[in-house]
Length: 208
Length: 77
Image (tube, rainbow over all chains, first blue to last red; front, side, top):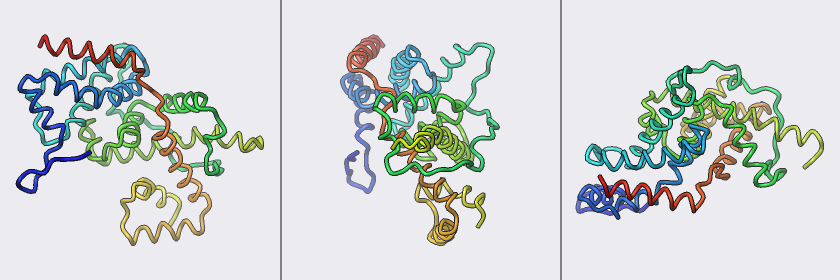
């Protein structure tokens, strides 16, 4: 995204200009921020809550909370990562409500056998997803990522799908950088292992 | 280098964050280990596939409704 050069060497992100206008009461400026990030917030919320209604509520509540707390936004992080942090917290709150009696935390370190040394390997070819139709592929990807523990899922989504850096992901989730790295590796390997079942099996059957 | 040592560097290799020296060591391991070649290529593909396919789309109609609701509430703040 483009930035605006100031007199010195510092650059001001366009979001900061919109935040400043919104703070001064310009709701249209905030509307631009909503339009810019509502899809991403919805995706993240849906990934965490696994529930459409909850994800819709999270979009509304996260933006409303951001609007109410604009004065608390320090400007030392990106507006987007600040907003994502609010959305992640709202999503986890809803996930906990639905799973009453079961603690849901992104802090818990889940021990799994998957995600260690990969086994039973076969290459997938250059375009493995071409074996499937668009909606079939989306179903496979949804089913596969839903099987990850929430703490791994959210790290993979923020880091690899939404493109946050390791540092931003750590800041957003309140985790250490080594914790983010360890979860990311395990999430990537677990997803790879699970997708391998779909792509490997088709190849085995001779369907290319 | 063992496969476990290679695996420990896998994320940094994928994210292009390894030193020149480490990259050379990793590439040397890859020359003699098909298992790790496949692990690397299929893990890269996994990330690519998830980036390419939007699996939770926000439909336009719902998007409009949410935007209106958010802004109506903001105006009341």
